[in-house]
Image: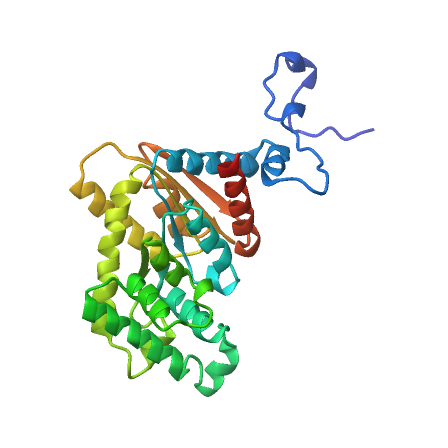
Length: 319
């Protein structure tokens, strides 16, 4: 006959069932996405998204930016240099011109790509090949332009970002209209640069003046701390692709702001990146908004996500 197992089996005939009619459902047909006609505005697109998870978060985040700007509060972007390398400059400039974005902060490489594009129309070399023969980052012109910017910053007591914008405009760089720093300067908006000594190709050159660069970048740190005191009163800040430098700088700048201005904090933050990194999650999304405010995280490639964000914002502001 059949061999009996020694192990007990739960008696399913004794379970208590419930009615689905009395159950709370997290997914309902009311929240479904909707197919679209092929020519719709961004708002219609946002409305058509399923009202779940990140789609709902994106709609909410766009609303936060709109409400903040309506009240005269800032919407500040902190960006990794990759955002320039993947061709987003015109989109960032457009948002600044429309007074949706009120300021930008980059890591040091942001200026290198911006300068190369402004003066020569191309950037982003083949690192692998250049590393093998020691030619990586050795372009004379880039180092000379960067040195001129730091010299101007020293001469006129400017932050590195403002000096960059002023220099690109003054030199009438051929593609200056596509430069985020020149555009910010022309529009009178703050553009700050937060450098690491040794992280950028210009550090390899004899013309690099570490003292001038460090001083000018520290001026930019103080400018960012001042911006943070405004952000902390109902503003919005988004970190786009800076994995370490700007999340760290932001935390210190925000601390200075809160140290100087003891008041109730109201801050909305968002992190946009292609993978989830530790520091942006902690330093942008969770810690600054712990007691009051809200942090969002959106994972996706910048060259898709940021045009989508910009399109959505422009539609929200035009409504």
